[in-house]
Amino acid sequence: KNTLATVVALAERSSEDAVDVADFRARFIGRVRAIARTHEGLARSKWESMPVRDVVNMTLAPFAGAGSDKLLAGGDAAALSAAKVAPLTMVLHELATNAAKYGAWSRNGGRVAVRWTRGDDQRLRLTWRESGGPAIAAVPAPGYGLRLIEGLVDHQLGGRVALEFRAEGLACDLDIPAPPKAER
Image 1 (spheres, rainbow, N blue to C red):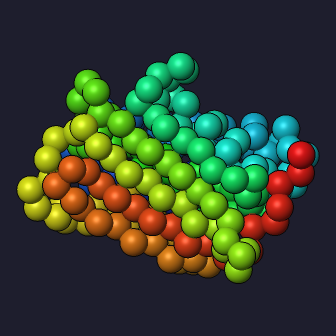
Image 2 (cartoon, rainbow, N blue to C red):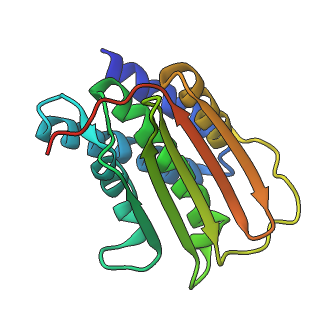
């Protein structure tokens, strides 16, 4: 029931900023595929915590391509509870979609660096840095994707997000409370 409610909400929201039917279709299908990958990953983890590394890789692989140098990702053995995997997946998907359309991945040679660490306070800190894309001249008006990121981090992850539109590319910092340690 919750998954269907999420899909309906995505359909409604994907139409808000869409310029035409093809744009709506691409936005909506991309978001539904991100949810499907999340469910596949959670099923593999038996609906328990997942390493952040797995969440990042499963979410960003369709954008970065296997063996590509477009994505530099790494961090410690932090994990997220099953309840926090889907919201983080959607946040990463929205960041990746924006990078592919407007940012680092919209140009050859553009890169995204994703790093994460679990601090002594047990908070997960994840950074997203874009480089090699078109220069950002002005802060864009917040569309559905940016509002979705802020809402997911605040309400579903119980954390904080800081977005900075630098000339060299988007910088995003996430601060999420209490991830459990990953099983090895």
